[in-house]
Image (cartoon, rainbow, N blue to C red; front, top):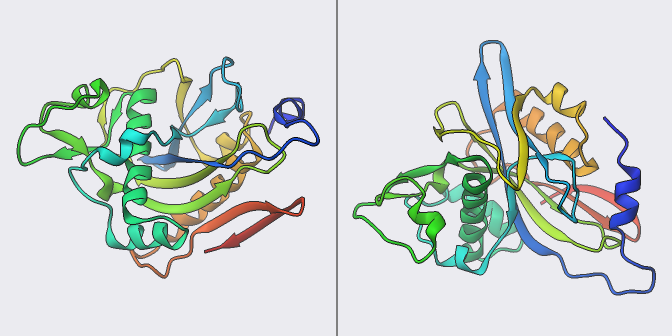
Length: 239
């Protein structure tokens, strides 16, 4: 893994300033089977970003207020909903997190995590009008939930990010670069670790590897891995 120490220092806030409150964000690790290879989708963040520029990450981003007003075509699985709420979400916020992840994935990669509504819909947001045809809406039932990570307090920008995972072997849409993510590529987890990735991405990759190795049952008892910093020390736990 390439050294990104200088970039991390540049992203730290000034000493004596108050730590910003983490903003909700979500991302999706999409995997597929290619013969003997299990690959995941990653892209390079544009150098224009003030947060983790020029690093490889999964599709995703910050939750927008309007994400809470989008009705999914299919809801979250009950076990996924409970695990999200166990980490401090209301059901409405849990859906907003998942909708945001689907929206960001579409905006950044062109891929559609969609299902059909019973009747055609028209949205005030153009992104959802571009999301397939008038019957297409976000399919949250395809998402599993495995990791939550909170950006350390010393950073200028902080996020409370939920990491979803999904099977992308039959995902719709045409994969393409965007202004947000460049050089989109399918790589194995081993290959991903050789890219320029943040520490948290390496941690998530390890959890994804364990998920793919074990394929856990759809149960509320499955733990969600949590990364945060307490009193200046990294804490890896579950919730």
